[in-house]
Image (cartoon, rainbow, N blue to C red; front, top):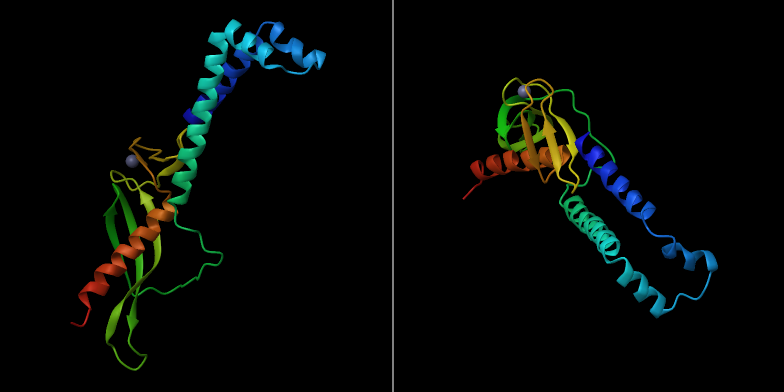
Length: 186
Ligand SMILES: [Zn+2]
């Protein structure tokens, strides 16, 4: 909501500035004349204030695009297919990134004939839930593309560079790594 408002105010500002441009600014376009360097520099000199505002807006939009692209690249890829498992050997409640999570795990057996466990695979991660009341956090993006999580009940907020799918993948990897370390044969 807040970022939508910000988007709106920026585009509103842009249109106000364009509306405030003197008619001389548009004459060239209307006449379809060759746009000479002299005319262009005249426009810039006569409208320094407007031109610098427009430049500033363009710079903000470019920076926003760059930051968003960088944040997008930090996210774990979402797989095309999900494996659905209905049975889990164990589940656990954990705290991670300032949230509560529920993880469902299955033991990896060395073979189906033995009970030797070589590790676990985390097959499902539910969350993020609010650390105060376990309500599901609502996810949205900020103007520059970070991920904002907010509890609908108590208003607990947390802003991170990662979306919830990436957080889930991190948790899966972290837990599996712990067990991998524990069961490692020296
Ligand atoms: Zn809450």
